[in-house]
Length: 527
Image 1: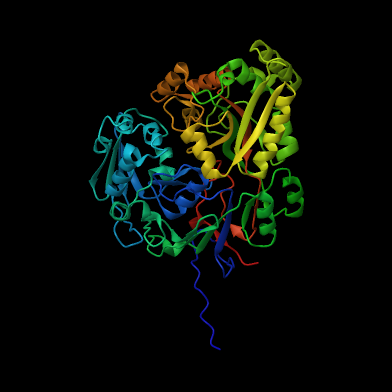
Image 2: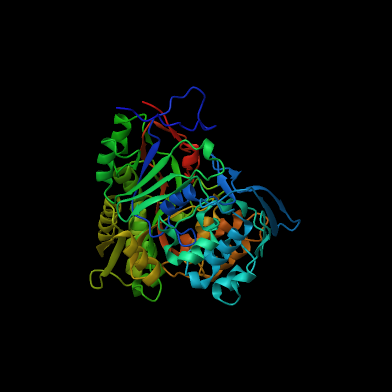
């Protein structure tokens, strides 16, 4: 029997000379939940961004330490007032052979801002301070009036309302990626189906079996395909962390987040595979103070009592055990240049917090004769359930009764951001860029992600002022103080990412606090 020729593996510049590569260059990656969409203008999740940054390239990416590196933007100029950026684009093609042009960015950004698109991330283009974004999103101006235009096929000009020093850092997020106008207009919402989808990144969509897998394969039309070593990526959604761990141990997954509490054991068993780098995300319980929320949560004394009663040390040290840190501020401690304020309740002992919580609840009129009952909502996950049960017990100690409600991801998101149908909801935020505003802007009254519908005029003003401040850090510190005083949410812990990564997989960016990874820079060595 004649054998087929061995595959020729791309020897990327990332691969050290003399490295023996595995014959099968497939990376299989676990995700907690399946994605709602593969459309860059509609995506809202960290997992979605992880997938999309393999399929598309925007103006910039990050290196292994989180520093900006050019993607499509080979160079740029900025005006003296720092409000006009002119980007020069490399020659690149879509996977169907069409050229990628500056107009593809113009189309994508206008589409993101257009109310007709109904993107839950349209607010991001406003956070970027793109000229007229606010009025376009509000429907008061046409998308064509957005401050972005193509000077020619390879020159993109962006005009801002306010100069912000971190503007280019914001351009690594998938919401800012180009999309192929011709394909989107031809197929409408079906443009992301495997048979229709056109991409400009190193990988293209091979298949998407809802609830089962998303498979990508190398895009030979990619301009740097010769330096892409991994040939296939498989994203496997699985809500049961324990089941995912079993599949990792069976060799069916190359990456898995370790279940709560198991990292110390797994570190001993798999010392070369276990890692727990800091990850710029914060876990919290958000209080619904909007029209659909319970009357009790409109009282700041109640919100403070609920927050104070949460024993963050037990959650981090006894339940999670994976390098996480207790959080008393909303912004992750590792965020670049962030200066956390002195938050009074952070310096209390847990007993002092519990005593204060009981006192506040009593002042708010709740007690044995007038008990407080709340619903705690979380998306399906054994880890989220463990935390919810713990919080339920903490609150019981101060006389608050609570019931747990869990929903699968898509239903949970709709209840959280669409219907605002919850009392208290498990939430988390992962940084879109490495700067404190990525966290703090979420709580502004105009944010689409402000699911609890909290409004504070002083907070809004600080965040608006921060956009034009020479050094916004003072505004950020004051904003965090307001969050601690008004408590629209209870920060619980700052993430790490306790994981098992197949030691054969090389090139994962452990030193990037956002953990933005690019499979084109990774490779698999032989055993």
